[in-house]
Length: 327
Image (cartoon, rainbow, N blue to C red; front, top):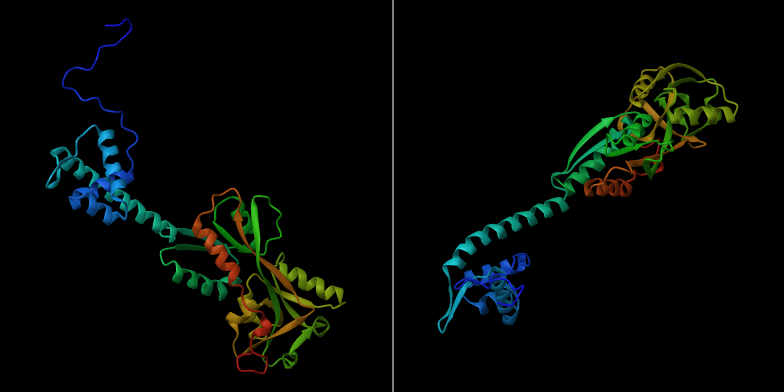
């Protein structure tokens, strides 16, 4: 034996390559050959050429170091090793089938759960309608809604505690990405029999001396409304302050005064005892869809935000005129 040469293979042993190159396609082709008992029929089933199937089978046999089929004049005959390998290969193919189905479920947003924080006003009409449309498109998506102030919503998004925020966002927190969805307008709420309800719209000057029911301090609508009144030299009396527009509307209907609310609250509350009129100059607040830029964005969250952007509510000017039923 030459110096440095190792011992040769022992008689009767087959040298086998180290496994590693075997792939899913080879197993799929092998299974088709087993089930068809023919290379030609397997090629037809898989829409491959016969040489390509033969080449794949030979590569698999070389990789495994096994003879899988005996080739005779009467066709292919599977060896005992082929039948045992086929039993294991079938489980692998079934597993890949389940994996593919699971991937399709993920693509269709199955198993997804979206936690949303939003202001109460948007939860009365617009957001339920938009969410219902989305769920009809993706019925396996689960939602959790939390109702918070805009300031609190921004904080929850920044801390990654919710997936989506829908709010008035004046914050410049760099961890929060903002996408403008629409501008939410304010309207004046009056008792149905109030003299000002005879007008189709109200100017800030028309509110001089009126008893005003105010939204909570810090509310963006209140801030803009009071700034508009001050710019026109209008003084008002305000003895009642509320956090929710729906309560403001109830107080107006009961004769407690007049006030401003967003149009989504007006649409949800509109009834025979209360009237809503446009304001001039207009008071509008931008509404944003918020998400945390550092939190991985799942496909469900991405599609939900895209859906929100497509479904901005119609302008108040598209609602029935004041003298129409329900206007």
